Image (cartoon, rainbow, N blue to C red; front, top):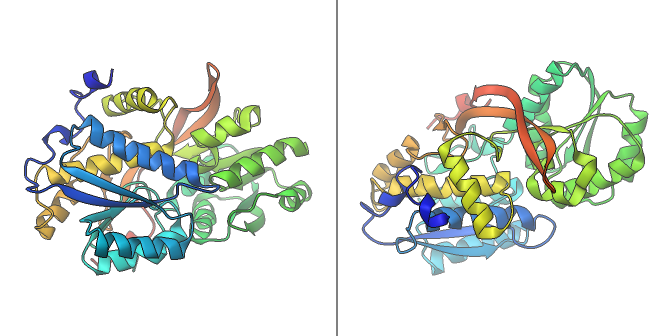
Length: 379
């Protein structure tokens, strides 16, 4: 099956290496252990699948390291990859606090960083860099879409909650940017928290008509299970991170019918996505997640640049990255002036597909959305 998919038009993948004279070495720092491991595993697996499908294994060497979700470990690994392993380009970080600890130093040293996930506002606005490209979204985006959806659903009094770290503050900022109703309460939890009894009690007493929460990875699993057991029946809204493919299998029936927002879904109807989903299931025996698709797109962006420029010519390679001349799993894709995506963001609903919990698109929340910080970027 996978061999048959190699001929599908997925950007310039097969041509990768046509201009790049020497094999390119990629340093991937991602989370492969602890409560956030599933996110990093999916980014890694999506990235490596794109390289394999392109037949580009002889032109791209990927060195993968586990940051253990610790900023100090991520910094040490970045130094090792750049100085000892002498990688040409960096990618992989999931968490925004780790991105803030690593990315500015990487780009200041003259290396490209391609983010398959974390998109903190500080790197989209005044702290932007010509060497930094986010291939996923700016952190606020999916939360902005959730706020827009809450308006259309008629919610007027939302309880909002996220972990206390850069992506969490961006999440609630994004939701409030588009949401027009009242805020019943705004709560920040601990990063990595697993007991949400106190927060659920606050929700119960808040008088809210909706709950917006951003809790990726193991945090989301813990909250959803405890919320279902609590008997509180206030409707939930979230970004895809709170309802990704891995969380859904752990949470089960409690997630059915919940609406969430994403720039990607396994049922998006385009040739690149259809090929990707089929190949991913064949390769790994599981339905891809949002993170899987972002890793896949990040690798294909890299391959598209390699097809027309050698990384030794930084200006030409940057121009090739900016062109984003690849077939994204999400369909239309382009970079804005701050190297963050301009793309549609969808509303999805959690459903059953056979015996698997997954998401299906039910509408578009925001069309051609860039981000709120691009005007602050001076590059």
